[in-house]
Length: 484
Image 1 (cartoon, helix red, strand yellow):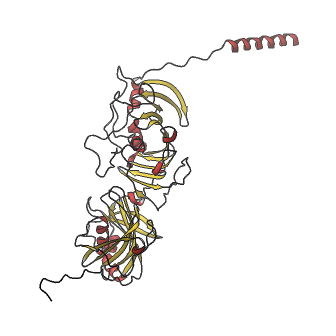
Image 2 (image 1 turned 60 degrees about the vertical axis):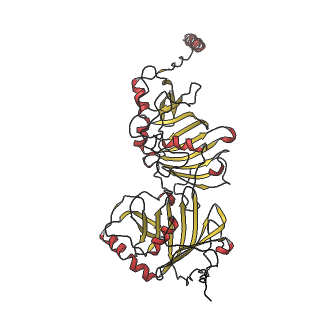
Image 3 (image 1 turned 120 degrees about the vertical axis):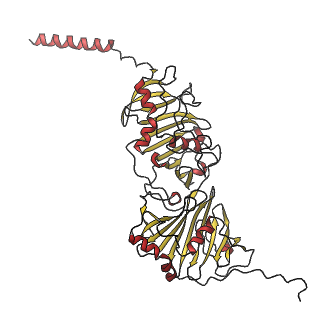
């Protein structure tokens, strides 16, 4: 019996060894044209992204010294990006970045480590500035690509006879099994003449755009034949994309579909999203009583944060008196840190004077000091009109909360500033929008203006005793001819 069992074991082992030596894996399935179902899934890719609202994203673009790396999130439903920018080619954009539609703001951090990490979910409140990417910057097409990966209708199916789209292989990613497909780049491109007002000089794409690159017309790809590769699951969800962009080089986009927190735009982009509604009776009464309450309060110390134009970023500090209907601020431009513009608004109009920083209140460009109480003699320019965005914002603040006809205001959301809970109330038309941040005691804590640069400027108000604000020096009257 033992001998028989031994012979059986030897025979089985010999058969197993011979089988292993003669075994060969099944050959991989060869690449082939897409089936109709695969083509429909690829065509629905951008609609699926828009339906899923948002995803975590990691991008590597370019090679060697020009390589940039992005980590963060994309919200296709609101055309919003929130990214940490790093890599050797990051340049002036190294740090945090947010883009809403065509408006781009950055929080530069030149000392940041080269490898980016996920940004904080609650973005820092300070040091954000409106930024204009230079034409030809490699970051422009990469950001456009991310926002262009969503649309409100399917693209043309790329599985037509003669199409270059192909099924390559099966793969597995963190989200599960996927198909690796190869096809021209399907991404939104701005339609001729449809660029949003206020867009950057390099152009932009808004999420949800239905203008798509027709399959077969792509001129850039990850492969020698000019195609892009998509890692797509059975529900038409994109997990990875590899392509090549002109002026950038190879680009790899990895999407983390389960990482999809609600994103908070920074103040310059309008702050947290809300659910606009009509005012309640209590909110309307607080708004109606605002002018009288501000006049009784007397005045406030004010701080200005104003992204204006295409890439102008202003900071300011000073006082505002509702008793005398006067405002007086020292304003710094981050692009010209050694200069200050003194701004005074009173019954005579709006006056400005440009001075060296030391003579205009000192401080830093990011946090300028308050203006000298005795306005210095100098070339003051006086205008009866409010002029630019800063003039409009200051003029609205001095108007003591006169928000227009009853019923014209809309409550945007509840928020918090300086430790106080406020209702954010918006008034005005699309071209002249103002937001009043009114606390539950009926005091105005912040006034916001939608600027010509499509960003939001803030004037924060802290109740304070306001010193006497002397008038600006007036030029001596010229003697009349013949007068003695």
